[in-house]
Image (cartoon, rainbow, N blue to C red; front, top):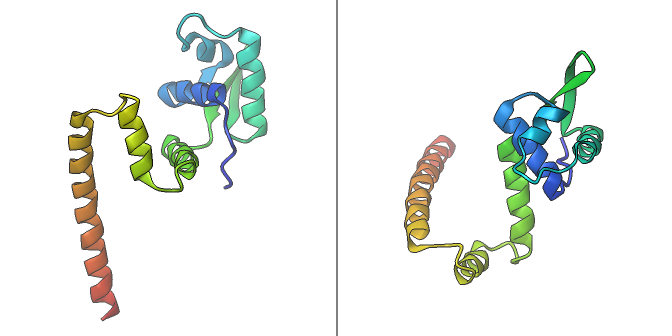
Length: 136
């Protein structure tokens, strides 16, 4: 499925749905911190997300429609990350440097990242080795 482009408000609505699973427009609105967007703003955006097939109505309770996301959080994050990386020529290093300059990346973050890279690097190495053996 082709992933739709999403606005910041659309992502916030999806985040509320990912956290709650299923929710009405009122419940989505109440998931926002104060000052909350107007109910009609959330309603319009939910209907727009429904048109983009990013969520769907699953049932109706009285007058309230209940919605659930149809796109996964991790798939959406990967797409968003790819979009951000495209601003940095597809490379992570310039983005990391920008984060460090902005004070958004600490040495502790870098250490955690190093552990994550090592962990996934080891998994990738095992996968490559087993694939190499399979082709021998």
